[in-house]
Length: 71
Image (cartoon, rainbow, N blue to C red; front, side, top):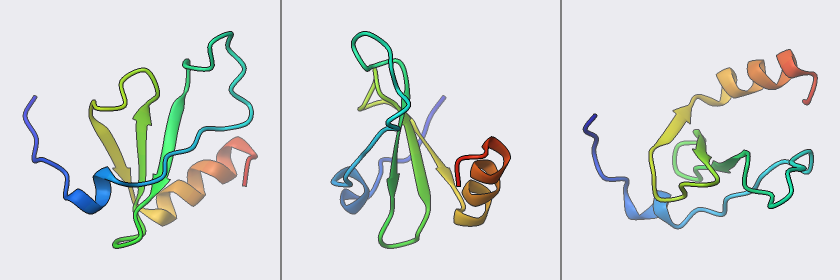
């Protein structure tokens, strides 16, 4: 898989993970950040912070949260 490097503004985002993450080392989850420029929700694997990121439209993320009951 190939990709385009992320703009610097995206690489300096504040990432967070759910308080529901409860594995022993706290690394078995995803992290989420909101892009201030586009409003996109970015999702990454907490074990691979420099790896690929999934970009999700705000409306799609809201639908996802509603579906999980975690709005």
